[in-house]
Length: 136
Image (cartoon, rainbow, N blue to C red):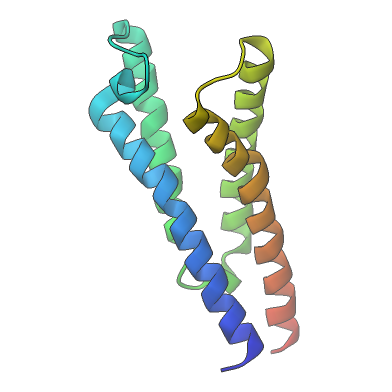
């Protein structure tokens, strides 16, 4: 196994593991609405509807990232687009933190994923693609 092959497998494994977050939490949001969040007993119908809609988008983004895993060296454009969606969402979450206050730990972890982990994965994937392409 070459170093690039090993790195590809590691990158694929890390991305697949990261996909668990939006798929699971998005799925929970679709099924349970905002009620699964700490401190939320009931939400007005409009807020519940919007929360489930956004959870569906989050779930879909997770599934879309999953489609990048098998041929990760060939999915640069898709990976960057999906990553940009996540970073934009993280910036919106950061705005909420500044404007409204500190959310629960789960949301802070989400913020770390959105503005930390995902940009690092985007850089890693782009670097890997450059080196993979140069080796061909």
